[in-house]
Image (cartoon, rainbow, N blue to C red; front, side, top):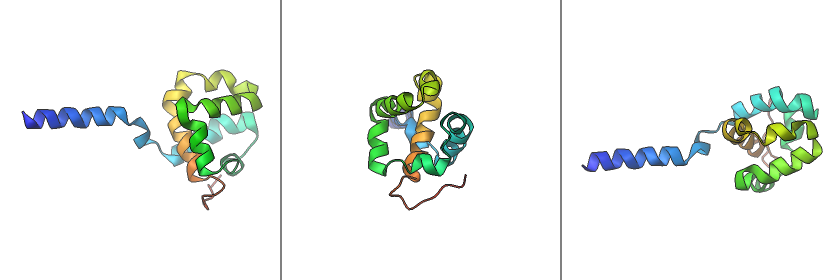
Length: 111
């Protein structure tokens, strides 16, 4: 009985933490493929637009701040930013990429 309870608890934790599996490298690839053609920013310029704390705040509340800021700056991205594909599949990776290479991180992505 204890084993079943432990397995159920472990599965619930895995389901509750999708961002735990986000990958900055994937985020960089998604950024270059989808965002760069529409924004004109390379990955370095994009990520260095904000500090780590600023990026975290922008991506809080299901990315509301990020979507609002980049949707206003780049209207051609607005519909995509509100899509489930972005919010569920891509946003965790883009978030980790932005935080990993933020202006105060000391890291520089390979574009």
